[in-house]
Image 1 (cartoon, chains in turn purple, red):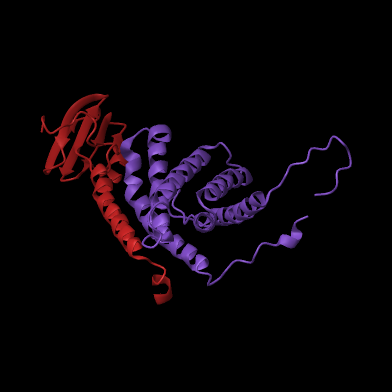
Image 2 (image 1 turned 180 degrees about the vertical axis):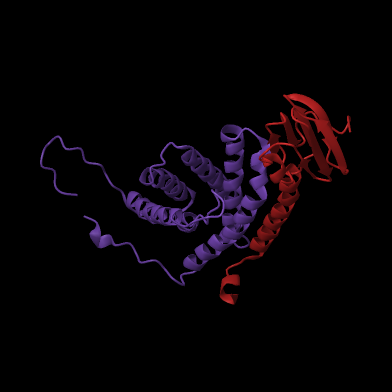
Amino acid sequence: MTPSTTEAEVRLAITADDRRIARHAAAAIVLAIAEAAIPTPLPGVKPGLANIVVLIVLQRHGWGDAAWVSLLRVFAAALLMGQLFAPGFFLSLGGALASLAALAATSRLPARLFGPVTHSLAAAFAHVGAQLLLARVWLVPHDGVFHLLPAFAAAAFVFGIVNGLVASHFLAGAATPPRDPERNAP
Amino acid sequence: MKRWLGHLRAGDWLAMLVAAAAVAASLPLGWQAGTAQLAVVKRDGAVLAELPLDRPRRLQVQGAIGATVIEVQPGRARVAADPGTHQYCVRQGWLVRPNAIAICAPSHVSLQLKGREGGYDSLNY
């Protein structure tokens, strides 16, 4: 940050926490945007690559950081794609909130037995479950939406495991992301 | 592959098992909800016949310009014949989804499938 030029300038105190969250959120946003370009056979079925970042943040920095990253991702990705406050945004937000609730629950499980794959699966199922319920209650007031349940559940199963494994892979240090570019800090 | 499996902990296998069971359990749900139960034949909006989709049946109804033949087989129904010019409702073929509808406009006849909702219950059955 440049030195203040006027007395009236408002200075926000930026903590290391803010930087860390912003960096992870940026990574999640990039993955979410990239993923939006991937064609899918069924609207709403997508890998949820941004959740890999959320899983890593959950393990390394705890649930609070993960919640920040997840929700920043939802808002920023929607903003960038022109979907802010569109129906899809609320489905995304509902899914993210349900996932975070699931992560809050599974992160209490003993880490010796339950790893990122468990977290990822729980989050993925919570995500599609909340989205379908929200869609049923709000967008499509007909039980027809539950036709989609097997497809969504299967997607949650596959991508939940894959994302969990990828997150495990990074967490194991096999491909550690570059350390914080602290020299960019003021 | 082995390297990836190494990331799995004992509980993860359990979680995967539970998740797989959840997927399996969801399959019949989607399947069942997608089954039509009843074929409703109407002329000018008035119900002429309600045919359960559990046994084959052919039904001839008198439309505005002649006889329309409705054919029902287990789980599906179609307009087998209609005197209309364009034959749209006939060429639509078999209807299988609830609320699918074939309309023979010249005859004023429609054939619509109904699911569980729509006034059909096991008591009347």
